[in-house]
Every structure is written in structure tokens, then in C-alpha cells.
View (cartoon, helix red, strand yellow):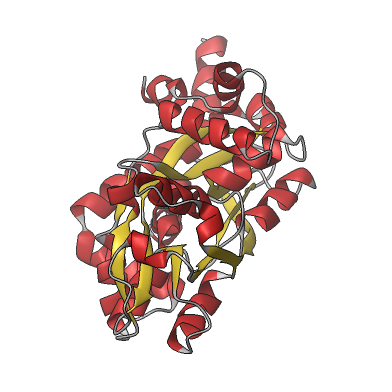
Length: 315
């Protein structure tokens, strides 16, 4: 009877959010519609309902900044791009593992609406902005160039932050850009730009943002990690079933107009299922470009990604 009482007490504490001594410190990226599952989970209190008491530990402008938070021990769970997460782990600046995907696809190559560029080959000799070298968007753009037999050296690839790209395109400082949503959508709804290729066209179902967790946190608080993942899965299910409300939540957290958000969401595939093969391809690219050094790609990905965590959590 005593053992039964302790068992029931443990589960009562777990599902009311008090099994862990403190809140789960969570972080996400600012104004990135890929982060919608996180915003839904916060807004609809799904983390609380699943037994994870969370506090916002940071809202970051870029993935590398968020990964620095992990490296400093200030974050337990983060919604972040697969690129900075992979780079940080490979370069040993953070110790995290990935438990779920957040979205696939969700980026586009955009050019001036009334310009002469009509397709990827037309970008030869032009200036194109990427959010950063070694980003998923950098890889996607180089992959698109390769598809048409264009060398990256034939294009002036520069780095700009996505919020700066629209103004640079409008004032002819650049001829095009590739960025994550909702920036491509905003370029279209403002009449400045048009899309010549989506990331779906370039690399269908490619991994983009992921749900990452600090290794020590996962080791010491596996039940809280499972609660976060359960909430994450339910948030994606909510987006699929309650599109209109999800749009409103995205508008609330990005501060962007509804028309841009609606268009942006058509270009994003929300999914919790990890793309292990996609990550292998990405690690091979980063290694080839000498951004990281990984000798055994399958072994690295096996340590980095935990595709069975969702399955085990659902049991």
C-alpha cells in the first residue's frame, strides 16, 4: 500500500509540473514563423498541461546566439535551426541532443519583382544575400546553383540578417536573397519581390528547425524532457487542426501582418519527425566546406539525433 501511495504521489507531482525542482528554461528565435509550434505550446499552455513548467530563458535573433546560451548553461530546451545546432556540437561549443524536428522546408530564393532575374541561372554576376555561411539557407542556395551548373564563385554571395534583406532588395543593394519565412512572404506581400525557387523545389523535405535539449538536463530530468516533447507534438497537431487560430498566434508572436503570415505558412511543413538522412547530408556538406570536421558522419548523427525519443515518449 505504501509503495502504491508513493507511485501515485510521484505521478501526481509529475503531471502537475513539480517533479522537477525548477522551471524548464526554454528559448526560441525571434520573428521566425518556423518557431510556431513553440508559440502555440506557450500560448495554449500545452507545456503546463503536459507537466513541464517552463520559463522563457531567451528570445534570440539568430541560432548561433541561442547556441551560446546552451554553451553557457543558461538554457535547458531550445527551438533552433539544425545548422547552428550541428555546428555547435561538432565544434564542441555546446552539448545538446535533438529530440524532435520542428519544421521541414520553409525558405525561398527571392528576387526583385520588376527585375530581369527570372531563374537561378540569371543570378550569375549578381549579388545574393544569405543569413550566414554554414546556414541551411547557404547550403540550399549552393545546392540550387549546382542544380543549374552554376558555381558559387560566379555569384557574389554576401551575408545579411533577414530583417535587412527586404530593404536591401528594395534599394537595389542586392539582386536577391534566400531566407526563412516570413521574410520571403513579406517581400511578396509588399510588392518588392517574387519567388524564383522555394526550398521545397531545391531539397524536398529538408530538415530546418529542431527541438534541442541540453545533454545534462536530459540525463537528470528525462520526464520533463518527455513532457516538453509531448507538448511539442500536440502543438504541431494543433496547427494542423486549428489553422486560423494558429495564424493569429503567429501574428501575435511575430508582429507581422496577417497576409504575410498566411503566405509564409504555406511554405512551411511542420513535423516532429526527425530527418536523419537529411542531417547526414547536411553534415557531409558542412564537413566538405570545412565549417566543421566530422570523420564518421553516421556515428555523429546517431549521437546527435534521438529519433526514437518521440516513439518511446508516446508509450
